Amino acid sequence: MSEPTAAELAAVAGRTRWLDYLRPLRFDHWIKNAVVPVGSVLALAAHGTDLDAGVAADVLAAFLLSGGVSSVNYAVNEVLDAPFDARHPVKRLRPIPSGRVRVGPLLALTAAVAAVTGGVAAWWFEPPFMAALLALFLAGLAYNLPPLRLKDWAYLDAPVESLTNPIRLAIGWYAVSPTELSPPPALLLAAMWAFGAFLMTGKRLAELRLLGDVAARYRPTFRAYSVGRLLAVQLAYAGLGLLGLAALFALERPRLLPGLPLVAVVVAWAFRMTFERDSPLIDPEHLYRRPLFLLVALAVFAALVAWAV
Image (cartoon, rainbow, N blue to C red; front, top):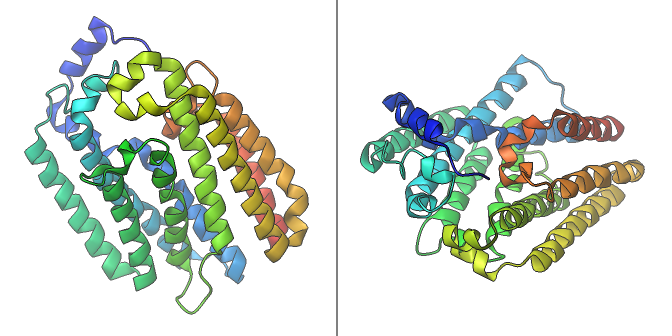
């Protein structure tokens, strides 16, 4: 991660001002909400429901609404992290630490996004969906907002941040699943959480290897980290995820057990990417730059769903 050049600084300074107020909402990070339609697909498969135009509209609405909640959380995160980002070699170019965006107008825009998102969700969906959407918002606050601010708790930050993965899956599930049908299996939610914690711990490990001693100036929790400990924790989360998935398959769909090694291949591939110099795990939302990896992961998911139904 190199220092920005003079040309990059000039380009940042010359960007359109109104667009700068949209950047903290991080619409490019909405790719993380791809877990929402995954949850919908799994619910449809579990309940034997067909996909029609109405269901497709529900899935799309769930994705957009979860994106709205995510953008609210991202904006809050950028406001609270601005003093730390100012010390980061690249993140200091973000709109707030670079001085291009004022906090007051940004918070007003964020409140408007929150109001619209909540209003549409309450009008469109039933209470279980609303509860899952609210959980996504509260998880973001617990992660970012003082005095709790769990992102500043070493080794607890990754598993807490990863709670958003099973929450997003539940959002997608309840978007297409009537209240009288079964909720998402607990083992499925646990496996999603563990795999998310695996990736987030890998992100910390990749950042530590890249930034070295500078990492602690950017985020104080890095003082408690070491490569060896992060590596052990990352492997433990991978094992928990695979174990949870194996238990789910054994209890719900035993015929899926032969597909477990395919999941292990995807996990091992992601683990290998942790040790690349500019690891994509540092910014997981940019994994689209690894189309082969995403294609294989999607193919494995599609194969497992096909076997399940």
